[in-house]
Length: 396
Ligand SMILES: *Cc1c(COP(=O)(O)O)cnc(C)c1O
Image 1 (cartoon, rainbow, N blue to C red):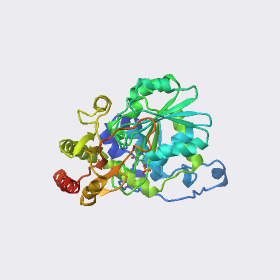
Image 2: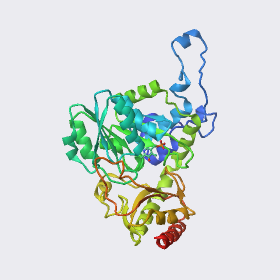
Image 3: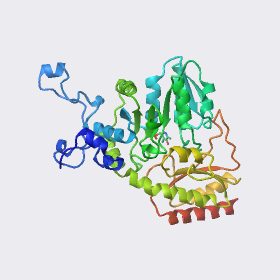
Image 4: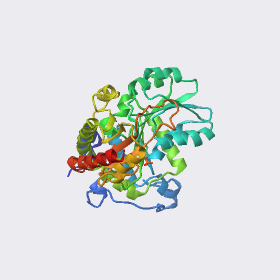
């Protein structure tokens, strides 16, 4: 097998690059995959080599071959200047904020943001002297009115991972860049396969790799990709300063996950849409929140900017007592009840975002439920939910 030159690799289509990226059998004793390299200490043959740090790797916290392989593969997907990985998706969100904001700075944060990111802004960022203003995710170009002289960054997440509001990313990018502010995006829902965030001008693109990248509910990992070499340096320097290295086993499992991510999403996207449509037709369901459905308020933006959908969405039930919802959820046998998503298995959970939202108060008539559709047979999943709705009706 002939080794490809870098320029030839870059010319390949994404599908092929995802199979080839982050591995080099010549460096792996001929084995197909990059092995798990564990280690803290790197030893040098001579004093001169040590003094000049003349080695590919210098110490365990600064990277190793397994982690490098993953970062190279992720960068192929993100198409940015560089990507770093960290031990959780949450750290993927907090790292770029820590890396770029200083005391006295102002941050614009979407009200639909992943809640632990919000808690980070309201606790540690606030203590460090960074002020956060939450904004309505529906704001497009009008976000310009919220900028202050010290606004350094705008955080976006589209769609929100509980409430599924889409955001007009190009309009926000234009307003932010006109102001000299960075745009950061939690792109976990669409993944780089379905939303090419850097091409739309997003400066920092974050993934909870825990979800579709790893894909098997057995790894926690975050990724941060930067659009420009300068920003990449800033993120990499913060990464080194904080010592947020990941375990090489997690890098290996995530690399394994992304080989099949496209296939999983190609199966899970239509399953999620079909399930959303089936739910929309049910009398117990008041509304489905899924931007790929034509009557969703975010559909036009989704259609304009995204090339696909993942299999996470939410529903609003017709008004019903929570104890009836409990009867429905407790008896499900195919949907696990728990946080996270993006694995091969279906999940369901009740949520209520109204107590902590500050810029907007979504008005729901009945209880809200989030679903993640896995790789099970759709008819089996529908039968499980159908029986659940019967329990809900009986308990109402
Ligand atoms: C899960 C999630 C995160 C955090 O990822 P963890 O690996 O669980 O820390 C961040 N953003 C979104 C949108 C998520 O769903």
